[in-house]
Image (cartoon, rainbow, N blue to C red; front, side, top):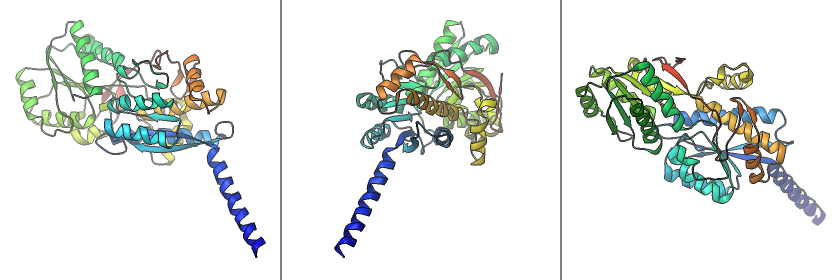
Length: 368
């Protein structure tokens, strides 16, 4: 009887050790972004992209035989919640992060990651995130300091408005991109008659619209996310105020068409390229479609490329030392779903370009 008990005990210990060994043989990658809140649609792109990349990499054998494991964290695009998420990532022993998505969340979260030697690859666009000289932060998207001039130059050279209003949501991302557009327009001699902020979450923009209408504004650039711009578009249309509207990648979401309806037709947006149209990405597109997911979103591909970049570096230098992985990324060009990516010393992509698109009320876009 005692021998039988010892045998069972030994078996149980063996199973526990086997489970622990298997757990140790996975490489955890955190996905940190908004699963709740007003911009969860962008988080859905991000999470779907990471899972698709991980599924395909694991199917191909993982990283030197180790499987990747996604660990999800919801920051709701809120800075305080992002810090809580970052601390949980630390406590969970995760060394790699794809995220965060919102610039206002990425900024404080990466303070934590830098202190702990956790490597994060973000699709946030605010320039100040990488101006701090951090070792462990990278991007798979361009900067607002490039996106703003792209928009501003197109406005000045092609749209040629007489009176422009630049509106923003008073947040790090929205105000940052709006300021970049404003300075570009003014440097090119365009008349910016209003630069104003609205509060994220507001529902009634009638006072703002009345003011812009009185100012005879013929173009409105909006820096921020789609929920507010969708309402501004719809309410402007209802008020008979129909200037040309334009915004950054954070308004290029099918939800804006649901909010604004026909008023979203003709909106101009700056977006990354349509990487889902590249034949080389057919496996990712097919996998996502088989799950009923939309592969067209820009943050799908910034997230796929983030995972691919981490994996190539880990295959070369191992996964146990994030410092070595970071050094490899800075010193090498990585082939990804977005094409070959190269980073500068700050972790910013070299040569990234935003494209210009016309948005349609059915939630699709066409390049200009």
